[in-house]
Image 1 (tube, rainbow, N blue to C red):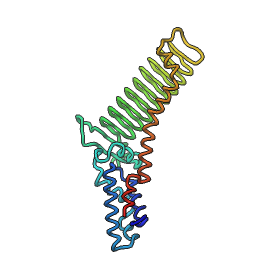
Image 2: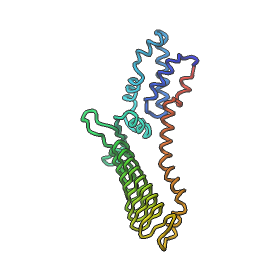
Image 3: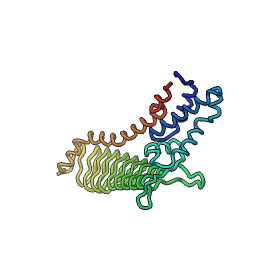
Image 4: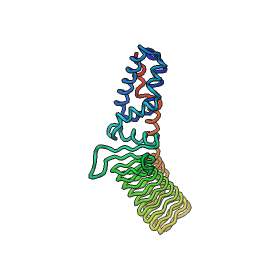
Length: 266
């Protein structure tokens, strides 16, 4: 690395892997760290400068305590990744709607009380999340995404709602998943419903399977049956797309792609 000892570069990259801020702030911090360490190296050996700076993780914690005081500064995705990575984390947005924060991110246990943190906001993200839009291990909301999702529209491993999409989907109106049970319409490998069911094994007042159907089956039910593969891929895309996006953001941070040009400067 021209103009910079490789040990300084590795140290800054290690720090920045644990700094969950917007790109502009990350670049400014990396630039400041670089300037500080290079200036210190004029009077001390590199190894002494690195030792005086402290461990990369501790330095990152100090930087986060100064720069990450609310969700607006971090960005929602960064706040979510920080919580998922650090295990114990809580952050609220400055913006409020009524008595609720616009965004509340909460993971793990409260270090003072030992109680499990619960994210409660208009947008709630956490181990347990309750909000109009909820994303978490257990998510409860009008729009819920999680391992266990409960809400108006629910997407999860276990999804329960008016409309539910998941490995096991239970719904009052529409359920779709590996196993789907609904009052109205169910679509899945195992589909059970009061009114209409479409799937590999389907039972309802009106049902359609690959081997048979109840007479008569409405046109829209036949359309669902004929397009079930396309609908399944759409469901997969809705679930996997955001996951790959988060993986991409995480990989970019690990590799330091957003700051490599700064560390490459003379």
